[in-house]
Image (cartoon, rainbow over all chains, first blue to last red):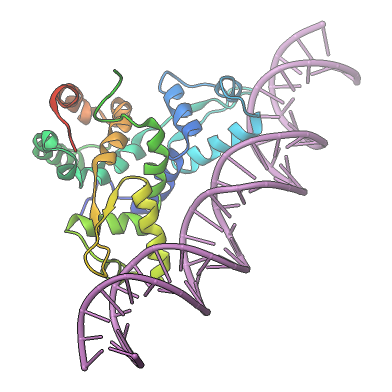
Length: 123
Length: 123
DNA sequence: TAGTTCCATAACCTTGTGGTTACAGGACTA
DNA sequence: TAGTCCTGTAACCACAAGGTTATGGAACTA
């Protein structure tokens, strides 16, 4: 049985969590939540060279957290948050250890997981 | 004021996500969800030396994900999952990008967060 | 006391990570 | 065509990560 929909790619959890472990990359993801952005736009707020940012984007891309487009000379990055669901799903197994306030979420989450596993293409 | 309960230590997210990025450490956490365990008990299922496991435990401890006890010669490790809430809270900002199935969680989660911030010591 | 078990630490090695500068190449601009 | 902008890649460096073996110390056992 196990988890069939979310948290299926246990393998990818390594890459996802590792990608999220860097504050620059988390900031990039937050920025991309507001819409896609070119490498220069992404790099602007950081005191860091453009190649460094390109490397971070590569890490995020390998984790499946972003996608790259091609718009003439620009390679805009676009948020692709689905792998986060796998991360949250894994963490969800520990919900009962966080705080009893979250216990109420447990049944709801399971219902939603079942629904997603049955019907949803989620991507 | 800021976020007092969940997601308080943005700093610590680095350590938490980094700790979770290793499959051995995730397995250790899963094992500890069933109850505290000594180093040898933890190390048993892994094809890995005891010092290697000790190192992993140190990483988990620095991330705040486990605590160590002292029971005679044993140093049992105990799950301490609160930092996971910070991780989930950060990831929660992206919920709307995962799947529309999870939209329903949004308001509920916020309510719970407010309640936890007000009253709960969560520790 | 002597031996054994449990664990931490030290020293070391290999690989990965995060940063740099230098450069190349595609696509606009004049 | 020449120049400039945007981006990726290569080469390099410092350091952290994950593993090993060796060792030492505290506590139980005989």
